[in-house]
Image 1 (cartoon, one colour):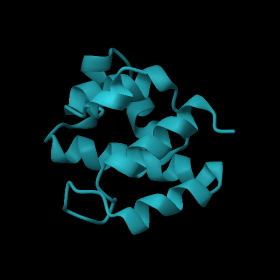
Image 2 (cartoon, one colour):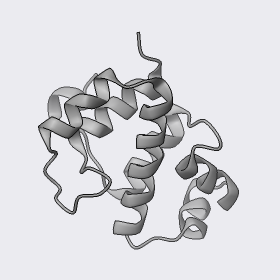
Image 3 (tube, one colour):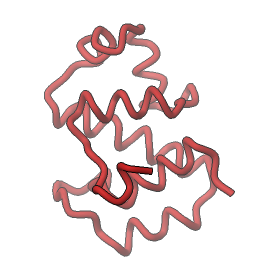
Image 4 (cartoon, helix red, strand yellow):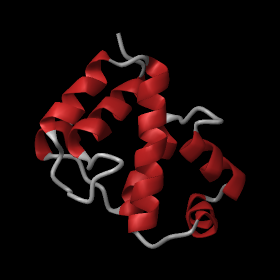
Length: 108
């Protein structure tokens, strides 16, 4: 059973681009492998994707921290997985970065 953050990491892996790809279309072969990974791997993948989304949005850690009303250290630690992410923070980051869930998932 996945925790809430693990579930979000799996969701992001399925619907967001791979960390090393420039395409916004997920690669099914890469993304389906996230289901078989350990929680540590899923969290690292989540951190990598959050950083990629931030840089693609053209935002600095300082700008994001100001919008979330937190420290830049917290943003850095979420991206490097030095600190666990909570669902609310990841949801807020997705909103800041303009990431939306597909209709069927958004309503859950």
